[in-house]
Length: 155
Image (cartoon, rainbow, N blue to C red; front, top):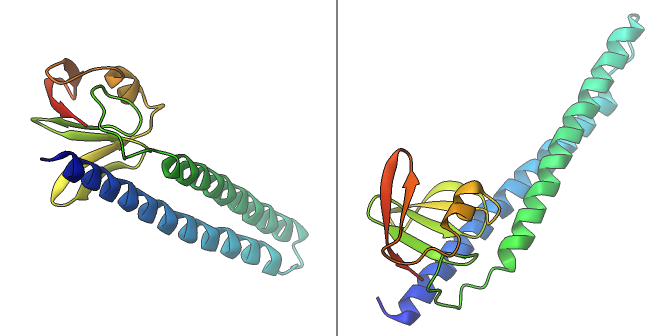
């Protein structure tokens, strides 16, 4: 694979992550709005406590979705700052790590994704596995899922 192909591949990974996070943000915004609407539309009944409980539950739900929304926005912001135009020799933010059993992209915590028919684990730079990989280079080994994994290449 040429340097241009490596950079293009990492750029596709980044764009796929941005798309996924953008979709999550839209879904979460909708959930916040729905929870707020549900809390606002809770009718006062003859059992006043039921009304207050329903409103409180709606506000709790809205707050939960608002926290998720804020986290997704933070993740998108961090991902957009990741530089995929550099070919790295060691594992770090923006690096793609290919191993025989699996591949990793250190950029944002999106978990297991399938991109270009490849299963790739998107890792947050703050994730324990990303910290374990930090500064490792091709041919280094590390434990993953009870296996001894060898890094084939990093770029």
